[in-house]
Image (tube, rainbow over all chains, first blue to last red; front, side):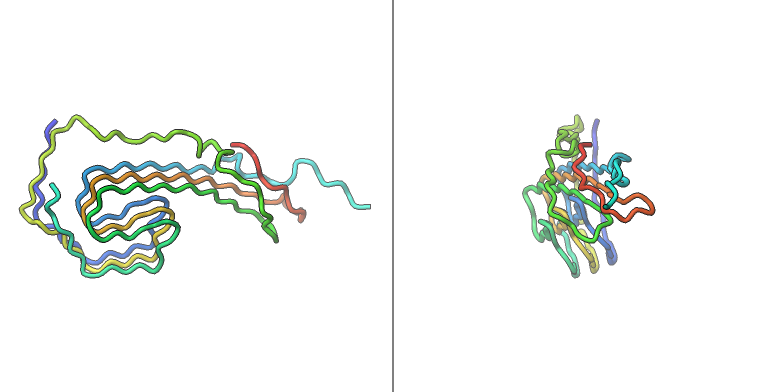
Length: 59
Length: 135
């Protein structure tokens, strides 16, 4: 496969960003290669509701 | 290929934290890595708990990384050698993130986040055991 790129004028106005987080990349410029990888885990098992065995009553 | 020049009028960031970087100028390579364990629980006190990244699968699994050498023949030409940007305002850069102005050779970024929530049973005020479950 052949991939030809011609970069003509590139003008951007103002940029407003709230946050760049978790190994994110915000780049103004050219880049040869980019490799991004991300995993986010919040499974149902991670929700622990209360002790399974009731605590022994006082007295 | 690296013939374009980035022109930024101004760049402002309130916070750059947790091994993040604001890189102005050309860069050979960027290798960012972030591991996060977020524990949320309803408790008056947070005791120091023995929590290790190795206890969770998400931090152990080898990651899928897109291959670098695709069978593509590429060519670039830059009749206009500038990338012009106005004012940049970023509130926060965090967790091994990178804000860059300039050309970059190779960039590899990796992020793994594990969320754990601990909430007491309804109508129960006793604090619950610390989570050391293995998921």
